Image (cartoon, rainbow, N blue to C red; front, side, top):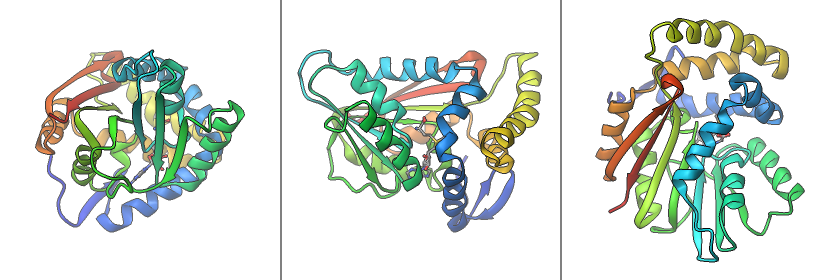
Length: 253
Ligand SMILES: C[S@@+](CC[C@H](N)C(=O)[O-])C[C@H]1O[C@@H](n2cnc3c(N)ncnc32)[C@H](O)[C@@H]1O
Protein backbone atom coordinates (compact mmCIF):
# COMPACT_ATOMS: atom_id res chain seq x y z
CA UNK A 1 0.00 0.00 0.00
CA UNK A 2 1.98 3.11 -1.09
CA UNK A 3 1.25 6.17 1.03
CA UNK A 4 0.15 9.19 -1.05
CA UNK A 5 2.63 12.07 -0.87
CA UNK A 6 0.67 14.58 1.20
CA UNK A 7 -2.08 12.72 3.00
CA UNK A 8 -2.29 9.96 5.55
CA UNK A 9 -4.61 8.60 8.19
CA UNK A 10 -4.77 9.38 11.83
CA UNK A 11 -6.87 6.46 13.01
CA UNK A 12 -9.87 6.58 10.67
CA UNK A 13 -9.44 10.29 9.82
CA UNK A 14 -7.71 11.43 6.67
CA UNK A 15 -5.27 14.21 7.56
CA UNK A 16 -2.35 16.06 5.94
CA UNK A 17 0.84 14.00 6.32
CA UNK A 18 2.62 16.84 8.11
CA UNK A 19 -0.02 16.83 10.89
CA UNK A 20 0.28 13.17 11.84
CA UNK A 21 3.40 13.32 14.02
CA UNK A 22 2.03 16.11 16.21
CA UNK A 23 -1.19 14.17 16.76
CA UNK A 24 0.67 10.94 17.53
CA UNK A 25 2.85 12.88 19.99
CA UNK A 26 -0.28 14.18 21.75
CA UNK A 27 -1.51 10.60 22.17
CA UNK A 28 1.68 9.35 23.81
CA UNK A 29 2.20 12.48 25.92
CA UNK A 30 -1.26 11.94 27.30
CA UNK A 31 -0.84 8.24 28.17
CA UNK A 32 2.91 8.03 29.04
CA UNK A 33 2.68 7.52 32.80
CA UNK A 34 0.01 4.84 32.46
CA UNK A 35 1.31 3.30 29.23
CA UNK A 36 2.87 0.16 30.73
CA UNK A 37 -0.11 -0.56 32.96
CA UNK A 38 -2.46 -0.16 29.99
CA UNK A 39 -0.43 -2.65 27.93
CA UNK A 40 -0.91 -5.28 30.61
CA UNK A 41 -4.60 -4.52 31.01
CA UNK A 42 -5.41 -4.33 27.30
CA UNK A 43 -3.58 -7.46 26.29
CA UNK A 44 -4.24 -9.48 29.46
CA UNK A 45 -0.45 -9.72 29.79
CA UNK A 46 -0.11 -11.19 26.27
CA UNK A 47 2.17 -8.34 25.16
CA UNK A 48 4.82 -9.90 27.40
CA UNK A 49 4.73 -13.15 25.42
CA UNK A 50 4.89 -11.23 22.12
CA UNK A 51 7.86 -9.22 23.36
CA UNK A 52 9.52 -12.43 24.59
CA UNK A 53 9.26 -13.76 21.02
CA UNK A 54 10.89 -10.56 19.77
CA UNK A 55 13.71 -10.81 22.33
CA UNK A 56 14.29 -14.47 21.43
CA UNK A 57 14.62 -13.42 17.78
CA UNK A 58 17.04 -10.58 18.70
CA UNK A 59 19.06 -13.32 20.39
CA UNK A 60 21.65 -11.22 22.23
CA UNK A 61 24.83 -13.20 23.02
CA UNK A 62 24.94 -14.64 26.55
CA UNK A 63 28.70 -14.12 26.57
CA UNK A 64 30.57 -10.85 27.09
CA UNK A 65 30.76 -10.36 23.29
CA UNK A 66 29.76 -6.77 22.43
CA UNK A 67 26.23 -6.50 21.02
CA UNK A 68 24.33 -3.28 20.43
CA UNK A 69 20.59 -3.03 19.98
CA UNK A 70 18.55 -0.06 18.85
CA UNK A 71 15.08 -0.17 20.43
CA UNK A 72 13.39 2.22 18.03
CA UNK A 73 10.20 4.02 19.07
CA UNK A 74 11.17 2.30 22.29
CA UNK A 75 9.06 4.57 24.52
CA UNK A 76 9.38 3.40 28.12
CA UNK A 77 12.25 1.06 27.22
CA UNK A 78 10.38 -2.20 27.70
CA UNK A 79 12.10 -4.05 24.85
CA UNK A 80 15.56 -2.63 25.65
CA UNK A 81 15.28 -3.72 29.29
CA UNK A 82 14.21 -7.21 28.27
CA UNK A 83 17.10 -7.55 25.81
CA UNK A 84 19.75 -6.44 28.33
CA UNK A 85 18.25 -8.82 30.90
CA UNK A 86 18.56 -11.67 28.40
CA UNK A 87 22.00 -10.77 27.05
CA UNK A 88 25.47 -11.13 28.54
CA UNK A 89 27.88 -8.52 29.89
CA UNK A 90 28.57 -7.05 26.43
CA UNK A 91 24.93 -6.27 25.55
CA UNK A 92 23.98 -2.59 25.28
CA UNK A 93 20.70 -0.99 24.19
CA UNK A 94 19.85 2.45 22.89
CA UNK A 95 16.24 3.59 23.04
CA UNK A 96 15.28 6.23 20.49
CA UNK A 97 11.83 7.78 20.71
CA UNK A 98 10.37 11.08 19.61
CA UNK A 99 8.37 11.58 22.80
CA UNK A 100 10.14 13.04 25.88
CA UNK A 101 7.34 11.95 28.22
CA UNK A 102 7.66 8.29 27.21
CA UNK A 103 11.46 8.54 27.51
CA UNK A 104 11.19 10.07 31.00
CA UNK A 105 9.22 7.03 32.19
CA UNK A 106 11.84 4.75 30.58
CA UNK A 107 14.75 6.59 32.20
CA UNK A 108 13.10 6.32 35.61
CA UNK A 109 12.48 2.56 35.18
CA UNK A 110 16.08 2.06 34.09
CA UNK A 111 17.44 4.02 37.04
CA UNK A 112 15.29 1.99 39.45
CA UNK A 113 16.96 -1.15 38.12
CA UNK A 114 20.42 0.45 38.17
CA UNK A 115 20.83 -0.25 34.45
CA UNK A 116 21.78 3.26 33.25
CA UNK A 117 25.21 2.02 32.21
CA UNK A 118 23.70 -0.42 29.68
CA UNK A 119 20.55 1.34 28.42
CA UNK A 120 20.76 4.83 26.87
CA UNK A 121 17.76 7.00 26.00
CA UNK A 122 17.86 9.45 23.09
CA UNK A 123 15.11 11.74 21.84
CA UNK A 124 14.94 11.37 18.08
CA UNK A 125 12.77 10.80 15.05
CA UNK A 126 12.72 7.39 13.32
CA UNK A 127 12.68 9.25 10.00
CA UNK A 128 16.05 10.92 10.69
CA UNK A 129 17.99 8.87 13.23
CA UNK A 130 20.64 10.85 15.13
CA UNK A 131 23.28 8.09 14.84
CA UNK A 132 26.03 7.23 12.30
CA UNK A 133 25.76 4.55 9.60
CA UNK A 134 26.33 0.92 10.58
CA UNK A 135 26.03 1.46 14.35
CA UNK A 136 23.84 -1.43 15.49
CA UNK A 137 23.89 -5.25 15.43
CA UNK A 138 20.10 -5.27 15.60
CA UNK A 139 17.23 -2.80 15.33
CA UNK A 140 13.94 -3.73 16.99
CA UNK A 141 10.73 -1.77 16.82
CA UNK A 142 7.71 -2.89 18.83
CA UNK A 143 4.27 -1.41 18.21
CA UNK A 144 5.99 1.69 16.88
CA UNK A 145 6.17 1.60 13.10
CA UNK A 146 2.47 2.23 12.46
CA UNK A 147 2.75 5.51 14.37
CA UNK A 148 5.51 6.87 12.15
CA UNK A 149 4.16 9.11 9.36
CA UNK A 150 6.73 8.16 6.66
CA UNK A 151 7.25 4.45 7.16
CA UNK A 152 9.41 3.99 4.06
CA UNK A 153 11.74 6.76 5.26
CA UNK A 154 12.04 5.13 8.70
CA UNK A 155 12.89 1.78 7.05
CA UNK A 156 15.63 3.46 5.00
CA UNK A 157 17.05 4.88 8.19
CA UNK A 158 16.88 1.48 9.90
CA UNK A 159 18.81 0.00 6.97
CA UNK A 160 21.40 2.80 7.22
CA UNK A 161 22.11 2.38 10.96
CA UNK A 162 22.34 -1.43 10.85
CA UNK A 163 25.79 -2.89 10.37
CA UNK A 164 26.22 -5.24 7.42
CA UNK A 165 24.94 -8.61 8.65
CA UNK A 166 22.70 -6.90 11.21
CA UNK A 167 19.05 -7.82 11.74
CA UNK A 168 15.84 -5.81 11.75
CA UNK A 169 12.88 -7.06 13.77
CA UNK A 170 9.46 -5.47 13.81
CA UNK A 171 6.65 -6.47 16.14
CA UNK A 172 3.35 -4.87 15.18
CA UNK A 173 -0.37 -5.44 15.45
CA UNK A 174 -1.72 -7.20 12.41
CA UNK A 175 -4.97 -8.58 11.03
CA UNK A 176 -6.94 -11.29 12.82
CA UNK A 177 -8.07 -13.87 10.30
CA UNK A 178 -9.47 -16.67 12.44
CA UNK A 179 -13.25 -17.01 11.91
CA UNK A 180 -15.06 -16.19 15.15
CA UNK A 181 -12.02 -14.60 16.73
CA UNK A 182 -12.24 -11.67 14.30
CA UNK A 183 -15.71 -10.61 15.48
CA UNK A 184 -14.71 -10.99 19.11
CA UNK A 185 -11.52 -9.02 18.50
CA UNK A 186 -13.46 -6.22 16.77
CA UNK A 187 -15.90 -5.99 19.65
CA UNK A 188 -13.07 -5.94 22.18
CA UNK A 189 -11.05 -3.39 20.19
CA UNK A 190 -13.79 -0.87 19.49
CA UNK A 191 -15.76 -1.16 22.73
CA UNK A 192 -13.63 -2.44 25.58
CA UNK A 193 -10.25 -0.86 24.80
CA UNK A 194 -11.45 2.77 24.46
CA UNK A 195 -13.50 2.35 27.67
CA UNK A 196 -10.48 0.89 29.47
CA UNK A 197 -8.35 3.74 28.10
CA UNK A 198 -10.85 6.24 29.48
CA UNK A 199 -10.90 4.57 32.90
CA UNK A 200 -7.13 4.19 33.27
CA UNK A 201 -5.67 7.19 31.41
CA UNK A 202 -8.68 9.51 31.10
CA UNK A 203 -8.11 9.55 27.34
CA UNK A 204 -10.63 7.49 25.35
CA UNK A 205 -9.61 9.09 22.04
CA UNK A 206 -5.96 8.03 22.42
CA UNK A 207 -6.99 4.40 22.61
CA UNK A 208 -9.52 4.80 19.83
CA UNK A 209 -6.63 6.09 17.69
CA UNK A 210 -4.51 3.06 18.63
CA UNK A 211 -7.28 0.66 17.63
CA UNK A 212 -8.07 2.45 14.36
CA UNK A 213 -4.42 2.77 13.38
CA UNK A 214 -4.06 -1.01 13.72
CA UNK A 215 -6.81 -1.51 11.14
CA UNK A 216 -5.06 0.81 8.68
CA UNK A 217 -1.71 -0.94 8.87
CA UNK A 218 -0.77 -3.11 5.85
CA UNK A 219 -1.30 -6.87 6.02
CA UNK A 220 1.82 -8.94 6.79
CA UNK A 221 2.64 -9.88 3.18
CA UNK A 222 2.28 -6.28 2.01
CA UNK A 223 4.42 -5.02 4.88
CA UNK A 224 7.09 -7.61 4.03
CA UNK A 225 7.17 -6.07 0.53
CA UNK A 226 7.66 -2.57 2.01
CA UNK A 227 10.58 -3.87 4.10
CA UNK A 228 12.16 -5.49 1.00
CA UNK A 229 11.73 -2.24 -0.94
CA UNK A 230 13.84 -0.48 1.74
CA UNK A 231 16.74 -2.76 0.82
CA UNK A 232 16.56 -5.37 3.57
CA UNK A 233 17.07 -8.98 2.54
CA UNK A 234 15.85 -12.46 3.58
CA UNK A 235 12.61 -10.87 4.76
CA UNK A 236 10.26 -13.21 6.60
CA UNK A 237 7.46 -12.97 9.12
CA UNK A 238 5.29 -14.99 11.41
CA UNK A 239 1.93 -14.19 12.86
CA UNK A 240 1.04 -14.89 16.48
CA UNK A 241 -2.17 -15.19 18.50
CA UNK A 242 -4.39 -15.76 15.47
CA UNK A 243 -2.99 -12.74 13.64
CA UNK A 244 -3.31 -10.19 16.46
CA UNK A 245 0.40 -9.47 15.98
CA UNK A 246 3.06 -10.18 13.35
CA UNK A 247 6.82 -10.36 13.81
CA UNK A 248 8.75 -9.35 10.68
CA UNK A 249 12.44 -9.93 10.18
CA UNK A 250 14.94 -8.69 7.61
CA UNK A 251 18.72 -8.43 7.31
CA UNK A 252 21.14 -5.85 6.04
CA UNK A 253 23.11 -8.10 3.70
C1 LIG B 1 2.82 2.07 21.14
S1 LIG B 1 4.29 2.88 21.66
C2 LIG B 1 5.46 1.56 21.71
C3 LIG B 1 6.49 1.70 22.79
C4 LIG B 1 7.40 0.48 23.02
N1 LIG B 1 8.11 0.13 21.81
C5 LIG B 1 6.64 -0.70 23.54
O1 LIG B 1 6.50 -1.68 22.80
O2 LIG B 1 6.19 -0.67 24.69
C6 LIG B 1 4.76 3.77 20.21
C7 LIG B 1 5.94 4.69 20.40
O3 LIG B 1 6.32 5.21 19.11
C8 LIG B 1 6.85 6.51 19.34
N2 LIG B 1 6.94 7.24 18.05
C9 LIG B 1 5.93 7.70 17.30
N3 LIG B 1 6.40 8.34 16.21
C10 LIG B 1 7.76 8.25 16.27
C11 LIG B 1 8.82 8.70 15.43
N4 LIG B 1 8.58 9.36 14.29
N5 LIG B 1 10.09 8.44 15.79
C12 LIG B 1 10.35 7.77 16.95
N6 LIG B 1 9.40 7.34 17.79
C13 LIG B 1 8.11 7.55 17.47
C14 LIG B 1 5.88 7.09 20.33
O4 LIG B 1 6.39 8.26 20.96
C15 LIG B 1 5.67 5.91 21.28
O5 LIG B 1 6.56 5.94 22.36
